Amino acid sequence: MEERLSKDYKQLSLKKGVFLIGLGLACLIFLMLDIITGPSNLTIERVFQGLFDPNGLELTERLILWDIRLPDALIAIVIGAALGLAGLETQTGLNNPLAEPFILGIASAGVLGASIAIVLFHSYAFLATAFAVPTLSLLFSVIASLLILFFTIHQGGSRSSVILFGIALMFLCQALIGVLFYIASAEAAQQIVFWTIGNLTKAGWQEVIIVTIVFLLVLPFSMRQVWLMTLLRSGEAQTASSGIDIARLRFFLILRVSVLSSFAVCFVGTIGFIGLVGPHIARLLLGEDHRFLLPGSCLCGAVMLSFASFLSKAIIPGVLIPVGIITSLIGVPILVFLIMTKGKHL
Image (cartoon, rainbow, N blue to C red; front, side, top):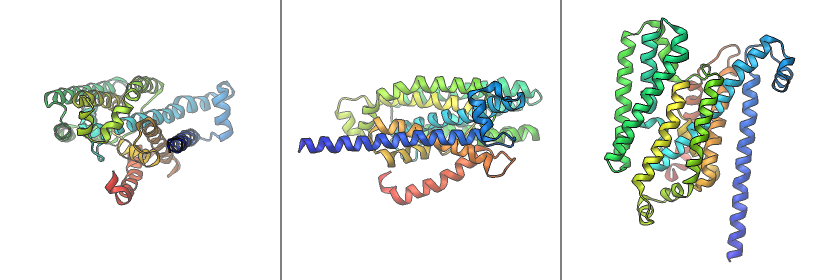
């Protein structure tokens, strides 16, 4: 009997490993599609040649590939992975299947900071884009994160209190953003709108490197707690009976979510549904074992955002649709499908 159970467990683990490999391959495929898609006349052959031999391209082609397309494609991968991880930890820590990283109000605070920078510095386009917008967005996101962490400590890690405080903070920031619309010029208001719906094209190599470093620093801490997160999914009562300090576990979980969300928002704005839907897709493929579910959520988030980035350029040739619109158009039907098919088990 034990031998059979061991064999079944190994087969199940092998199956999950195959799924993870498949997600990794899908990630690479959409990354390449994202790189080769665009309004310029770069052919697939020239793109592949430029990736391995940049000096073989003309100056214009090299600038398009290495300064525009590659950073945009890579930031989609790393932001998607970060939001997928943050979404999983939010849903697990708050035991809420409809939770996502932005439910805590961090994204709204980041957009508020960016909106203030746009209104104040819209006459100085380079200063606003290169420095003021990401800096104030990150600052406001960090302030919101600190408020949430302080509230978490004050309330003893109560998940319902954290959710309600996050929702209140989100509506407060949205109200203040609405006030800025009234005092902003038409040009500044348009920039705020684009920041609100998410835009990958503002990121360059510096942003790619920063977000990648942040993600790689947070990931090991998340992986160290995969057993605790799996146990937490079985219920708070059972977790507490095992001697786990749930308040402390939830504090560090929210800390990781706050860091990932803050750095994601400050460079690309609010991109919805990745942190909500990505973990659910991974859960359907890999189950509740966070040893597989955690990397699976990262890969699902990366695949979704990379696919959305590709579609944003491919749907209407020559027109770049904001990626936040694409993720919503993709995420809504997936979410409805999940609710209809797996609603009782979410």
